[in-house]
Image (tube, rainbow, N blue to C red):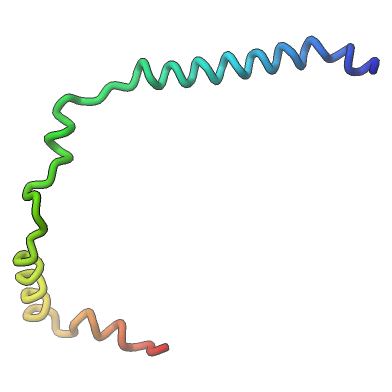
Length: 79
């Protein structure tokens, strides 16, 4: 009990300091975080639908330009 009385004030002040520090961190994140108004322009897709035609074109280029197809590498180590 003697040790508790001796360090009670230090423990109490430490807990209060941690609570204040956490509150300041949460508040500063909300106050100082700003979003660029043009950010939405960069996050929108160019086309709202998925374009399979581009994927087919890329697959055709891969098949015609690579001497070994990438799918062969998946078949090298059968499980």
